[in-house]
Amino acid sequence: MSAAVAYADSALAILQRDFRLAWSYRFRFFSRYLSTLFSLALFYYVSRMVSGGAGFESSDEYYAFAVIGIIILQVLTSVLAMPPMNLRQELVMGSWERTVVSPLGPVAGVLGMMAFPFLQAAVSAVVTLVFAALFFGIDVAWATAPLALPVALLGAVAFLPFGILLVAGVLAFKQASMGASYIITAISLVGGLYFPVALLPDWIEWTSQVQPFTPAADLLRHLILGTDIPSDPWLDVAKLTGFALVLLPLSVAGLRLVLERVRRTGTIVEY
Image (cartoon, rainbow, N blue to C red):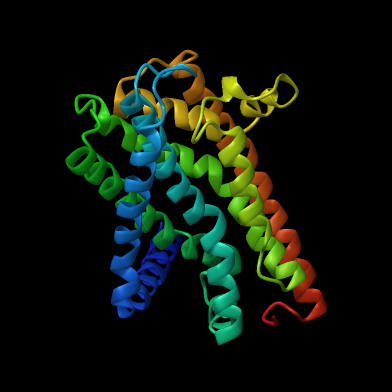
């Protein structure tokens, strides 16, 4: 019990440190929300060109579909792109050494560094939804929308293994991970973020069923917008749970192997 409390205190300390660092750059802290508003406006006017077809009865229906894609992309960026960048910054600044030798340890330290980006993305997601409802009139199913919070958390846990593996890549190869941008782009195409996966060619549509991003998108649209879902919602919940239970231990094990290797070579704090 005392060990769990110590881990929680250490993780909270990392979260507070990351918040203070982000808050010290106030313009950048708030500009992300201005950027969100610009993205919403861009997709709103693009959606005006959609007048039926592809399963959408109106341009407003497509716009609401795309807004959920924007929200999921924010979470993806926080889980996949930010942790490798933050670790690179820690290595360059020399602050990673303190995490390595602390009671928290490097593995828990990596997981702790993912807390603030995710919370920041969660706030951005709520702000995005509020902006879209207030300024662009999307119809939110407020009765079921609160249920999207635990689903989003489950989805983030299912996404987390990919971010852990990218962090392991930074430690192993001493390069800022370029893989995150490619993975996010690929997910945007095959995950159903900006268009239905039914539009994909038959030879690639199967990829929408072998990753956790498509069921997360379907569930969030079902809960936030009240749209029909292609499959049983509980089946999608089971998929996300399965991805989390299988991939998370494997990714942590992979991170441990990389840490053991860089310890043996004496490069754990080098970049």
